[in-house]
Length: 369
Image (cartoon, rainbow, N blue to C red):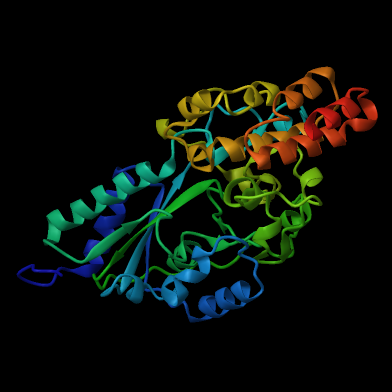
């Protein structure tokens, strides 16, 4: 807890925190005294419908997610920060999505893993506060705890929750990461922003799997980001054809959003494209060995799904790609893979091409034998 000789001017401290945050490279810093009772009700209802799928941690933390003072005792305010990630050197997303032989990877995952970048910078901000006022109670979070970061950032005025459930900003759209400092400092909260979505429903209509079941409600079990990243087992058969060439995440609801016309490219070197993953060939990625996967994705958010799910996702994309001898040959290489899950998705992909490939019956026989 705080041990300063006298209470600081919290209004002035709040101004300084925002200045220090901008100096550290954050695009915006704002403060809330979170009131999450209504959000808690919505969360519990969402969980009751099972929309969280296999993300059991969403339920296991109970109401700590909506009660900051229970998550971090003593919390009275939350400092929220925003940091853009849109890489300036990335290939045009819509062109990649329209190229069936290419793999689409969500733009946030093209560079280094954002967790370390944000956490390090948030810690520096906390250290700067401590230098100014002495020790105080706090914890730093970057998508690393059961915190309702979008709701808190919205209450702080960093933006408003869009109908796709992401935070939106008039100046930066939605291509950014969020981070928080939970603190016992009684800082004056900033006013929230009004919503500017109006009657627009483009994000809802654009979702390839209709995962946005209503404004502000996402059934994660249908979301391609969930299917390619969070889901550990088999991807539901009815959703596989709808995934197209998306092998890690999905940005469709952001790409269609009118507010992203105002989004600015990130200045962070950590978020620059690595290893040409902004528009890679599906066949090239499918030929990677596990060692190559580990090497090329080290330090990336992609690394956490592991090689097995990587192959699973690409197999689905190849099943959705135009049939060709090269595609069939590549799939047949993995038809007897050591992973049952990989074999299953490869067999499905081959079945998608069965009518246009004379080799398909032989592929079935080889697997059955």
